[in-house]
Image (cartoon, rainbow, N blue to C red; front, side, top):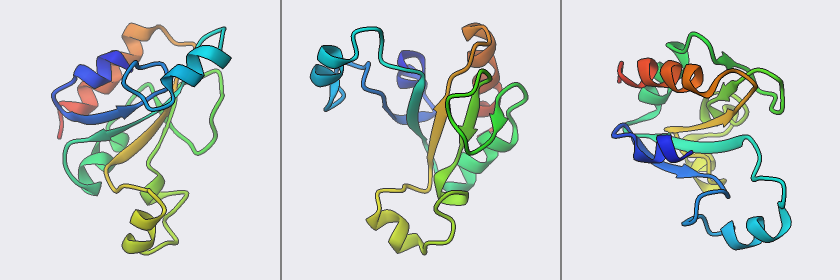
Length: 122
């Protein structure tokens, strides 16, 4: 989450483990064994930029489920919420450039390297 937050091609990161997250104090209080492996982030750009990131990942799998042993990514605007119009997606808080990442057991440097090479292409 910190690495993504500092990345020049990432607009924002939503992760309760980050101190500036609105739910950080509660997460720190109740999640005593860590903040979990699921986070959301927005790439700089539009829906096509987010799609390009997903399409160019090599290690990270594009799947809708979360909590797997392998790292997964999904673009809600193009998958789980695709049946909604663009206006309905925005009303539901689904942004076109948003991605959701479920971090698996691969080495963190391999995960970051895969994200980096995909982000380099936008």
